[in-house]
Image (tube, rainbow, N blue to C red; front, side, top):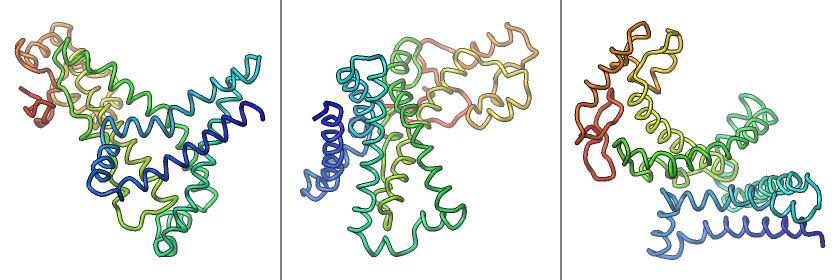
Length: 275
């Protein structure tokens, strides 16, 4: 049997077995429910996401490079890994729907959206969104390896990532199959992106508190970066004005340095992020 085919079958089995285990664990009493809760938040969720998405995307190119003595072997392995991940979803989805016939036959998000834009457009669109999985995985990696040193070096506030990066929509009644898998994806994606945005607010206001020259850009960015309207120096000011903002907003060596136009948030120490 070809090595890449062996990889594909082993990966398919591993992913389906992992999905089955996710369904089984909460049914194993209090220890199982505790483990399920851990796998739904923070580090536990990071490991689960890595198992189902990141590891296949790394193992595929490695397997392909070993299977083919050519430069394109890694690309073939990546293609096989992606195909197996898609196949896993396509196998799990109808099985999960068959296991919940009442929900499958009742009102569903997929049915409503299909009526709105058409089934072909809807399903094509959700699969296109799956292309962003590596991007969100990289953002999450940056939250682990790029931001933490800044909390020590320049005293940016620390965050309990489990309060942001978690999933809970699997508890919502009636979400099955297609609806469930994509809602869990959005659940994870939203938390990762929101935490990254929060961290970036701290970085931007601390190092570059200067309004953009484009008024349109300022208007567009103020939702994600409220300090645009809460103290950044005007674009036509001087560098002395920008330095004065830093002196005023970050007044001492014993304070944390959060973005300054926001209500207090709790840090991992349980203290307000603004000191």
